[in-house]
Length: 255
Length: 252
Figure (cartoon, one colour):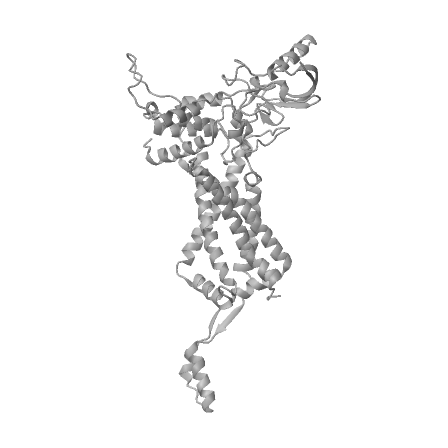
């Protein structure tokens, strides 16, 4: 027998890598969605969202986290391409007539296509949000504004120069503005919603499939895993669509 | 006894190296009581009498237990019936005037020998890599000396019903042999007699499966539906479990 393959060079190992990175990306999607809800006035609003975004991008752990996330995306995508190419090679000549036997689903059959659409979306998303228009909000610290107020009331031009020097106007990115401006474009919002539905398709098969790949299959829990997978897919597709629907159609404040 | 008039589109290919194509044959007055292979026997009889090359296809026991028959019939392995091998498929499953397309299993690991016959020795090499147990030779041991839980005995028996026909590979969009390999890994991993080689078996059989060029399992479950012996994908999860565990602990 020929040389044994390393774990990640086997078909099972590659699929384990796909499922583990997939579950990690699922975790990222969860935290991203929770943060997004701060966009809504009922929960957060402009200041709350910008404060959260500012906290996030100035956090010391953000660079290692972003590198890790980038690596997970790359591993998931590169492995997916490798797996797909290997599968193509495993059947060089296709059938003249081929029918489904009813077990596969539209979602399971279109993982490569849905994944590709999500990839395109991801690039556009980073370009238009993370690296999109940089609006700034300036916030003057509370104690400073009080000092100036006091000076006006007393009617004296008694300005303490040291106060002005330290009254550094805190300037942070107004990511909220970028969001509402992007979503005010109706075509952009529609494409965003389309991408989120496709992501739901991807999750509907991907989530449950990752359990099977990792060997977690038991008749007692199988229907539960399938149910949760479909439920989460719908939650994520709808949850992420709330923002383009709200800022694009219900309350387009950035137009 | 009713009869059918059929149009057959049969894959003809002289060897693995030559290109094949579909060839059309008219079949009249086909009895609905005939098996699918008997129908092909009659076609071959006709072709031989006309001095033409008969259609080559695999078959042996014709009672659904040997795993020799194959055929991708109208887009499905072993034809339209569930849990039925081609030899057990009868012409009553078809309609009068129907066009039936018959193709070989298509997988780079199953090269076409001729027409509808493919070389499935890749499966034999997977078995050789680990589908065996070490047994003590000598006098016959007392049969009941090793206790086996009833549930494990049942699950092992379910896995052992695999006849190695290759319908799982044929139906899989990735031409993966995961269902076959997992049935063999499961069968022995569930029984006390299979414990000695348990770790190495999982590693060696998965390695051989990959060496043969089968595709990846993307957990769609078409194989389960195609399997004439109704082997379930639960076995694939068990194989993955065995393989992950074995890769973590093996010193080989």
